[in-house]
Image (cartoon, rainbow, N blue to C red; front, side):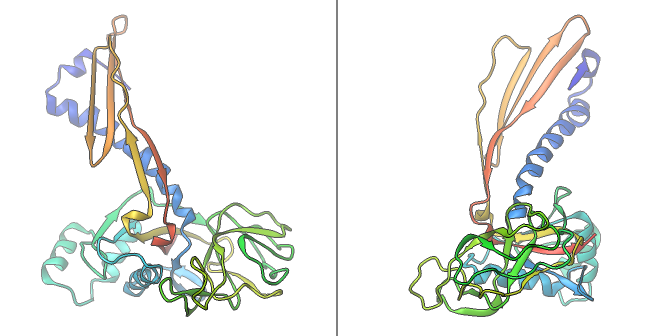
Length: 318
């Protein structure tokens, strides 16, 4: 951005509030938006439904999200909920009648924000970069084509309508395993579609991979059995349904790394600071012909969702 020497003559407080704070906020938001796209790789999903459609989550959905993390061997404690601002407002309202510590209820009433710990979640965080997901406009999904399939894609009959990356699907008769005992938990294993799938396609890319083995002899087994040929394929949300992808996670589900950018010489000003492990650099140069200081902020970063199964989506209708 650019600002004049007159702007810089303002008090330090005005300069920080009017110039630096919006710059930092926009840059941090861009990084968060990028990392948040990884929520499309989360394979666990819960929702409150009415007539099949997603509605506002209740305490039950937040508790079920915790149960999902338990079954995927995510450590307890330190869990965080990331909520869209609208979901946060609805959640505070929906939980207002529950038995809660007086101090917590008072703070939630005053701030309008969820306060932790609550419902097994240590921290509740509102973020406007939470994804809004639109389910693929499928009509029917057909069936599995061929028995004993394994791996990160499954062959199907031709799909009647598309699927979108981030859609959550299940296969009839294919149950989730307890990650410790390798025994079926009695509920269908959920899989996330890892890339857009076109109408009439005959293969769906999925995560986690299909690795059958309920006997306890297969180390990285994810399901009790492979889907049978002709097994029905179901999507957990309705066709073309849009919802907010709030989620609960253990922080180890995703990793963000930043590096210290070099400090250039021959400029008006340069500074570099780190906060919570995030390194940010500011460089400013003066343009004498326009009396403008040209300033930029940079973060050099990389990110990866290394354990997406240690997160669970809590859907909220748009």
